[in-house]
Length: 243
Image: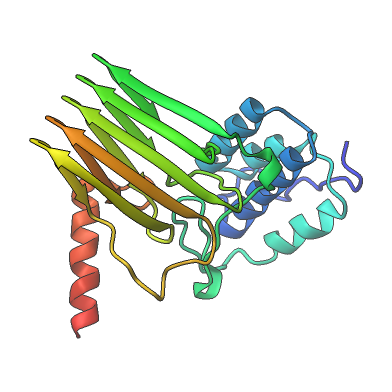
């Protein structure tokens, strides 16, 4: 049980507020950092926290988490149901101040591989990107979706290799991204846009792409947003800036 028991919400089926959801995500990050469960269990709970629609679902995810002053912090989040927030991947922006859920550097894997050979490989939802990621698509496809990822305080180097296949990388708007690479009878398309007002001082995603008879694409989307919806949103944002 917790050091200070977490109170059950007075209305268990009420809709989840952005502030409450973010508090639970932060609590899960802290619990993982203190070895209360494995990386697989951590990622499973983060996925469920992002999908949760009621207080009961959120409460179940932290019922066995040990945190000091948990009830005080949870009650504080519940006191602000009207919190204005926009979730961008793991981002919460109350009052326009965005941030990324983060974990300590020693909890971050050193390497990860995503390989699609005559098939597809998708990595999405809540996950912890390693310091070095290799994505290889050979006559197949690989998708890396960072919109709900939990980052450590470090640079993430992604080597994206598309050989007669495709590597698709999706990032949230407020994640810093740098790209480099080249293509031979293929394509490397970077749809990220630098915006000094939105860029965070947090982790940097550095992408090195190589495409031969294939493609490497980097796209920016909000959680749950399709490519068409993302294009529509960007057009509206550009029109608003010109006014």
